[in-house]
Length: 168
Image (cartoon, rainbow, N blue to C red; front, side, top):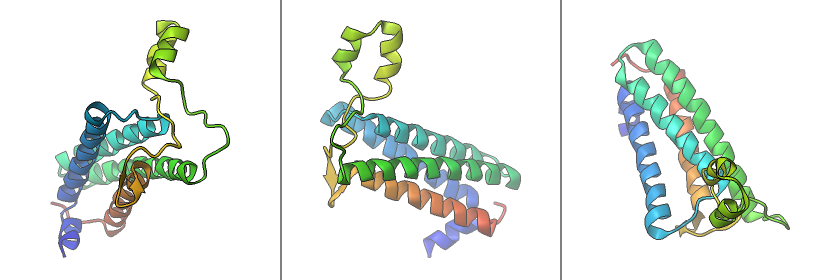
């Protein structure tokens, strides 16, 4: 089984996880800039979590020392857990939307109503509605798929850390 062989080569598995995170980030940028979907604040938080997982696993894959990749894998596990939690919360909000959704303001409303010093940080928080389902694949929303990916990364990292992996 290919997962078992990857678990014996921890640096290769960490590199694959990092590449998968970068691919997910690229797909998110495609959905935002080409398809026109506006990310919500929770989507932005998930992007930050993906960046952290990608950075930690990428750095961990770069060095052969066992302590190095174990430390990177542990940090990536924490980031993946945080990303899974955020995606699960967003999925919950999508399945059971609150009466009043307050996920953020629109882009032009922020620019018009706030000084530029306050508007710029607000822009990076996202402006879409966290309860809206704008895109689906096989019946799952972006938040649902994000949860599955984060959970998969966390599971692989946990198994890798528990097994210890071979030093390669």
